[in-house]
Length: 549
Image: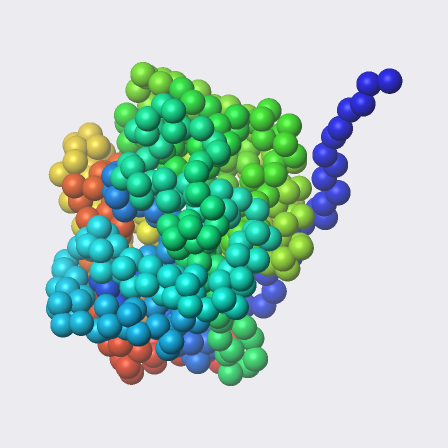
């Protein structure tokens, strides 16, 4: 007579098809500054980039994750170590695009005051993003807007509270963030008596309401960040779901039973990092996730799918296995732990079908064949990166480009095209000493060979005019043409490549002593929007994609 319960996943076998031959750009949102911003990109920037790309025929703008991040103690600039995979970064809210802006004089006064304008000018001139300073510039304005809704606009207050009630865990997250603000540190540093799950505070309290308002407002601004192409297609964000969240963040605090406490995620030793890598995320426990029907993973997917035209699952191999490093051990002594991949793919297919959104999996690096077979079986796009695939003995500049893929020359973890060409990445590896001297010398020799032979190959394919003394931007255009005319369903152009930026956004294996995930674009948004040459180059990519080139 005992009763038992089970979760049944009745899922379609495949995610929605990525139809057509679409293209877009990659621009990590934090890096794209606007003239009247506060030193970092925001949701207004995303909307304007989407409008620019759509006008030229593109259908997406890709970014690193847009999730809530630690800006106090600790300050963790990486968008891949968020406070939670379920809530947005409130510092990316554009104040002037909020519902309260026109009616809230105090917020406008705070933003327009002379010292505030001077501080924004100073932040815009910095070579690296100072997230704590960004918070000091942005948060008082946002809090004034939220307080206006709470105390002076009953209709808006009730709307925020009603929407927050329908959003699972939003109120708990708001109380958690209020506690973070109070303690100034992540929950592991709180007094033992205050680490309990039930935190004080009510939705109508000033601090709690602020975080409710911030999440609702971020949702509104993301929902508004869409545009129409001349052909009638919708241009929407291409959102990135990271593989984990910070161990001092909301997810690990709220669901301790889902995450292993005395272990961290990472990567084993490979050709680039002989000592392996420790990413400092708590690994999800396979049996615990299974016992709850993978509800947390499904919620993380839904959070991204509802605003995206395409979602990328970072380190998609996590659906199959993850590398656990026991506490106190080096990354060389980790072990792979298997996950119920059939159930996790069913969850992906189910949530993606409900949203009607295609999904891509990041399958770079050492990936077993079974992973890519599963991606193909379930209809997920693979990741194709040109830097890893140059083939000087083939008909084209790259090896075989999978049709079911999103193809690009580089990623946020690789050098830009110009940086690759000039060996900036190899200089960094030499500086940090992560490669044996003979391995580094071999890589430099291969890079010299590529520089010597690639122009002639591109010219032979009709992608480049004169191979001798070809300008670097002409070589870049030829490579973009090869990708655009190729079979990949989606092609993504790194925006910084178009002005031959050499500095990377991130150097894997290094810390925040470098400007990782803190380097703004050399060009502000307004310059990007009015650059006719940049627009012409993107328009050519659109023509190549459509076969009109």
